[in-house]
Image (tube, rainbow, N blue to C red; front, top):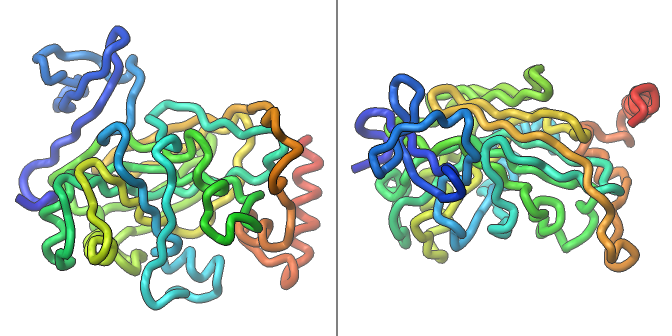
Length: 303
């Protein structure tokens, strides 16, 4: 049966008294564990609602027209989608911490939804892809933009740091994400908004069929489907939340971390025009006044 069919069902994976359990959300807000007990999910630690670990996490670079205009001055900057991968150690759950190490200036949020694979997919058509999806979940594709100038564009250190892939609070089936609205909040203020079906260039069905031409997708694998315009940097103490109508609201808090012990080796974090173009959402070579305004505001706030 297609993930779009049937009633809305939300499954969560939580920790109860030190043990991990799957459960199903009830109409009254309770979480019924698979063993029959009902618990209050608001008091529990949430784990990512997927296989642990998934065999792969694949993310698309640009899939929303507003983001294409913002970063490339083109609503469709590439003719077909391009992808990168995140290690499974980047997984994080609802209510978790996002560690911003000392020396990292630009830790950007990207609110989006994750598509979680439900059964093995290989050599399928886009219209068949819905039958291979277990469900959808709000997600944050976090990025340390300071490393955009290294790793040959692979995004390994930009997007692959520990905890940089929060997903949850649950996995939802019985909805069509293309009919929903995505909103991201920083400290309660809305900073991203998109009607998904109006802005997405390629839907999850296209992405899955595209990837599965040559790469087998296994149950629990995650496809991150991209973000709309206005990805910006966060500071320690910030709360970032992504809410998708009929899907849920994922929350993460940014905390400060120390510098790595091996801080003197390898490529350092950078503060270059390309880094700032993506992290701040403008090209200082075109609008240098915006960079001056940003720096003045940062100095005034003590950042």
